[in-house]
Amino acid sequence: MNPTQGVLREQSHFLHFMDIAIVTGAETPLGLRLIEDLIRQGCRVHGIGNNFSNVTFADKQFIAHAIDLSDLSAVARTAEAILEEEKAIHILIHAIDVTPGAAFEQLPIGNLEAILKVGLLGPVMLTRMALPNLLRFRGQLINIIPANKSGHVASAVNALIEGGLRESLHAGDGKCAQKPFGRCIKRQNENMFRH
Image (cartoon, rainbow, N blue to C red):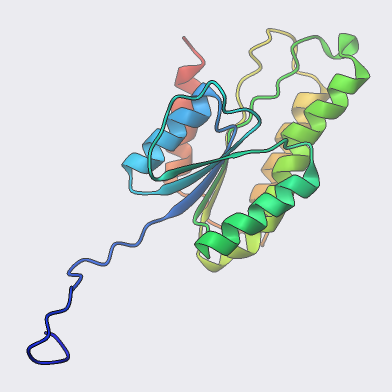
């Protein structure tokens, strides 16, 4: 029903609420697959990655943010910009593969620092920036930790990253839901790395 007789106004019969997602590791095959799946499910996705120059995927619901996750100021600025634009975040997925490519004792110190910044500090900073919003909207925080594909014995680096990201799931006294969707993605991830 139009409020003014004789004046036709466009009416929306369906108010579709679009979930907003952020995916880290967005330039990787895993990240892109997650983004495609989220868009297919009706989400708008902000992808965070280091370098999108080789990414050919394009969709009007995909916004790429090329930042260095080891630059915590850039992570904070990007999170603030996304929150300012969207006003809500419903899903945050960390899908970063920073498995060391060498045995721990042979890993150069500079590489160790970069791995910890990109694989732990950057995602923890992004989680901290998004957490109040995720809690408010009862969103999902999903951490996908790829298997150690280097073939080396899992090291202290792997344990630290996995443990740090696992602890970020418990932030906010469990009010931020990790729903079955997260388990589904984890299962998908495990299958991808078996091939």
